[in-house]
Length: 132
Image 1 (tube, one colour):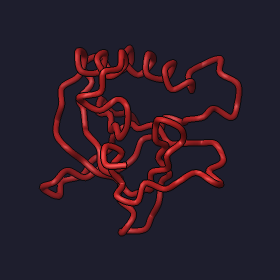
Image 2 (cartoon, rainbow, N blue to C red):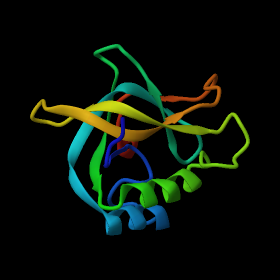
Image 3 (cartoon, one colour):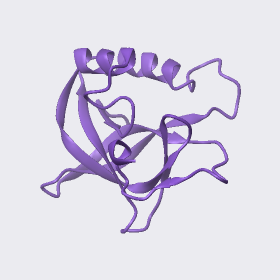
Image 4 (spheres, rainbow, N blue to C red):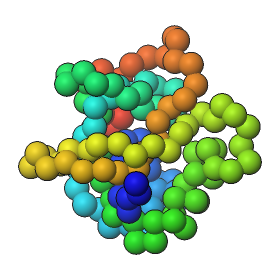
């Protein structure tokens, strides 16, 4: 299964003055705010998403439609250091997850899930990186 949608929850969100956030904004259409089941940890100056099945664990972010999904995902995989050629285990894994829009509709989207040990990393309780 594949998708042309991407859920972002950290430095790739709109408003971040970062080259990759600008690349995403230039080659994708903002569909709206969205959420997924999970928890956010503060890794350094950026967050990591840990997936969860608990209904109370929500991460809030933004959903984008990727105009040329394969090319943009390759670029983002390189940025997230999880593309081809990176040593295992990579810090992030790109995964297809369920995301929910404010109106309650849900669907599949790609996102980057944190893949390294999280012991000692602070949890962003609100699930919103911009509020930490």
